[in-house]
Image 1 (cartoon, rainbow, N blue to C red):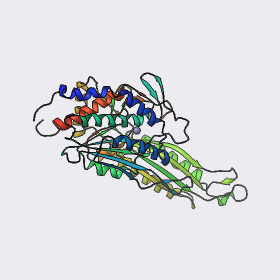
Image 2: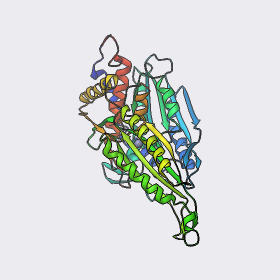
Image 3: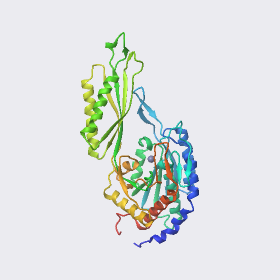
Image 4: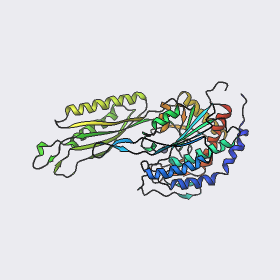
Length: 415
Ligand SMILES: [Zn+2]
């Protein structure tokens, strides 16, 4: 195999330097479109803009695949449908033998009625706005990197599938099956969650699951028939204490009781109470341990509760932990080497956060998941990104695509 030197790639990377202003203008437009998860109208408007931008690159296929509705426990304790919107899929060079998957979400955590809606530059290199880092900046990076790659002499030698999902911020419950399917078609994946402000990537990621405990009792008038009632709030309080105590049993998991609902007027014995909680794990063994302990805890709560009280558990783990080992470790080293060539020092740190990279890793696809823009304070109304990282990150990704096409992947024979 002939070795292609970095100088050969430079000409195509330098083209990206002239794209900075256009990338920023596009990001400002995209940030101003509210695409909070479940805001189906806003997600639809965003999907139209994205489809325009990616079809301009001439993909072999462009699809907007409707996701089936999900389900959640509503405030009445019963399951209700959750709409997710459409997953966008753009495929380039389907004839190529080597294939990359590029993934990021176009939903944000900011709902349609959030006060945080407007992007603004606070200095020449800092853009504040909803989704500017997480993860619309990352979509701008994918778009520019793919365009640079397609213009290069290697632009037909790598299959690229771009997937943009509308439901990541609530755990990708609707898009997960399509992501797993796409993982089976690709050799490696690049994901565009934001990097830390100094460019550090996320390494190992914890797994995560969301759960609801629903306690049903019996309503009664607190004055006239107190002893006929069965108090769901009091029963839930016991369960919540037991849930929190799991943190002390196993230091490698965290269980966060996040929200309690239940009760009403003070003269009514409450018949419904709900607790919502999140569990994070470091390993598959942690996940199995947590599933077993939760089952046992709910069984025990039912066995010891007063007659007329029932306790049920809904939810589950949607993100398995991601470990940096094997081909994933080789891919991180490969990205680090490319960063070195571009004068971008690249390091990575473990994180408690999780993303679609967890699920792709669990499906056996090596991936690096924080190749988006540099930024921070995500999920808050102070979210920002560093403007100069648009071209910086696009150069890195374009180099990765060209190298994959021209030189192959780090675990391939002949390297
Ligand atoms: Zn994100």
